[in-house]
Length: 386
Ligand code: A3P
Image 1 (cartoon, protein in one colour):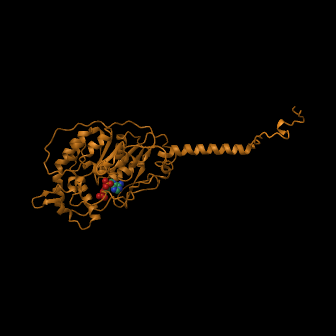
Image 2: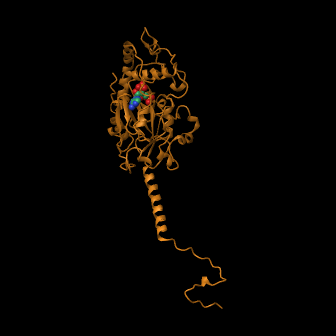
Image 3: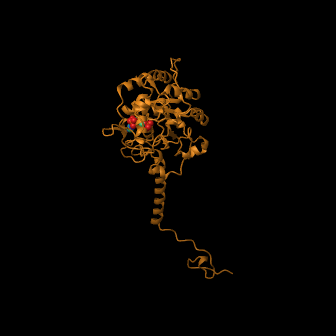
């Protein structure tokens, strides 16, 4: 029989019975503190999550929600009928490495302005998002200003790009698309994955290979006066191999006859019209954007506006993002992606060129003129190199 209890004691107080006792209720202050801490954690998480793509591009939270894209489709341009197009010896592939000034290794040295390291916030979220194959690729041209364009584009919160040149479609295609995708940075919903490898533009197999990956890939080509581009290319080689012959002697197959050596890669890469033809067999012209290397220097914001429209991105990168650095002689970023500090490209970009004889420059201009004109017709844009 149970004992009758009195004096406010519960059955748990009955000696000899070992029922578990509930913990005493937490004091209200401790409970409030725990709640406050939990709320702080949730707020911090949400803040950093929304910042993952945008905080590095602009101060404050002004750019939050920039995932929405303005659809500014580039109008398709009509290709003009064939013009006189000079015949010339044309090598199978410039990537073959048989060039007379070929330098082993990468076309672009892994310089400080090609950072692969993500920003601290990106690192925090390196586990979030997913790796995608690029939806847009800067395919050329070597020494056109491709690094500058990629570095400027990376400021955009909806652009995530691999820093180094992957060289997948020319050198590493055998490694497969899974290998290629694994090189890419993680992206969140609404962000574009990009890479740049300027040698793709002159790689015969690249158009078919990129089209096989995705017919919708957007292609960007930064082009520059082919004469200046050739000198820039030569200057880069000279910086690695100071013993190479002079620019003048490499330019000509027969100088007295004025015969240009089109087998030299520095010359051949500048035959843009010729290199563009195979791309147009695989991609509509409207899926390609031609950026002026000259205007990228004189009006970076203007060229970036065209690129953002082409990529269907909100126009976030404007003239407010640039300043002209007198010492460097080039536009630089007021706030670089990741660091938020002023940033110019490194010393391998914007090198001093050797002086070239006026007569050689004239002969080169004459040589390139018909190819340039053809290129203007094909792209629907006069780049003003003549
Ligand atoms: P030079 O070094 O001959 O002047 P790429 O990145 O495709 O290799 O192109 C290099 C070229 O980019 C440089 O060639 C330079 O002229 C050009 N360029 C364009 N904008 C630049 C910038 N903001 N800073 C430095 N170089 C820039």
